[in-house]
Length: 300
Image (cartoon, rainbow, N blue to C red):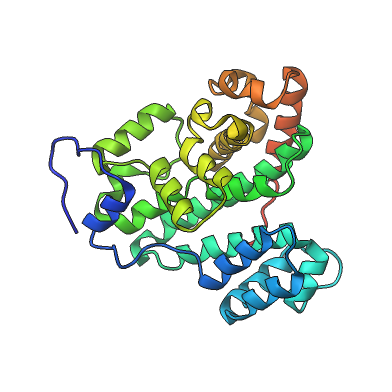
């Protein structure tokens, strides 16, 4: 493990951070079966049988997918017993989200024992943000078709990667208290400590795992939506709003006290999401309360 000096660390790439940490042989990647299944699902002409066959090569992944498919978040009617039933019941796009969810969660199992609690808190935040993205997409009538869930799920994975690369400096990088911070100041602080920030690190992770460009943008720019590509701006803005609501809830603050009209970020993201501020405020308030009442997590 390398040690930083007292002076600000010179800017480096996420790949260089990984190499300096002596972990170049341990790149964080999704399970091979998950990556293959996602590639198949992204093909408009894909066959369900091919998607299922790719997943069935990994029995552990298959077991996890069925467990989540039968969780309160996804279950409809009778439990599903096979992957084919899960795909028929949930649809191919939702199963792709399911595969990504389980694949990302598998990374948490590799965290050092001393960091398990912090990582569990972070996973709760990621999953909560994903659920918020899904509900906000519906109530604000944004028209996304499932991709908003995985964009919310991937946005803060760079924070998890810091656990692997810099466990000895994690207390300086991230206190996991979900406090309100200016996004630019937060990223500057991370670059001071580590030479890179969690947005760059998360975007690198998404890129090496061949995730869609939309997810890369959400990881890279969720603190700065205007910097995202024009075609990705609305999704990135949605993720930033969901992230802010989740931070509010993770701090234990009452959901009914969340008012988007008082949030600094609202002036940045509102033109991406709605023209009716009052209606949006009411929708977002109800969504925050709804998520706060969901005590059952899909992955416990």
